[in-house]
Length: 291
Image 1 (cartoon, rainbow, N blue to C red):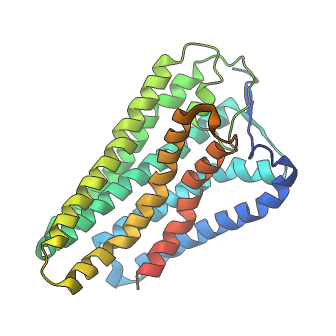
Image 2: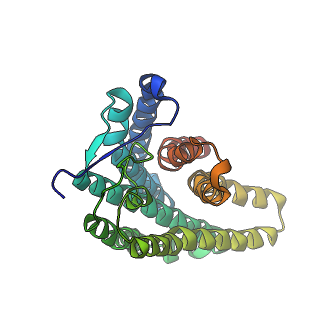
């Protein structure tokens, strides 16, 4: 693999304004790093926030920081300096961290749905069910699952020969993007990627929907309208975070099935929405809805 490298890409058709696009991209990264760091600082410094809900929020902030830090080293150079070349090893390291933090975010959103379910359906025993050791165990399980499932992906890609045009579709490396440039049989890589997606994003989304179905059932059984509104209001930030994270994924899968009718820039835009927007907007959503 000596000398193996790839070329990253910005939004197709907008090469002439890449330097102008770098301004909002820089602003988004600064907002993401500042917003999530602020959440971590506030939760740590305010004793009244030392509760499971805010521990999970801190986990979400950490994963958002990791996701932003994973895409930043190549995205900004592509748009600001036009530096598109990236070596194989750097690319494989980046795709490992991008996908790991993405799945970690999905895991944290699932644990936050569990937190909301316990808080609404069994409020009197909330503190005894979600103790600090259990919260820590859920966090460690999310990290272990994300890292464990993604270690094989770069290892398998490392062993493939790359003899086609080495132009990627994004300003950062992603597993499907790198895999399609190999000039060898990639059925095993593709099957493993599908398995990881279904066992993480697919399973997590189903469990989140199930959790909210149970929450809705509990809320509808509450007699008071004011209590119903209060219960629903506590779920609004989490629902917004779930929609911000999963909607682009659904859009991407729909685009892949719609074929050639989609605009060439549509997959790139949806990818940006999935990897860049949640780290920016999650702190905004939670700070607006939380005193």
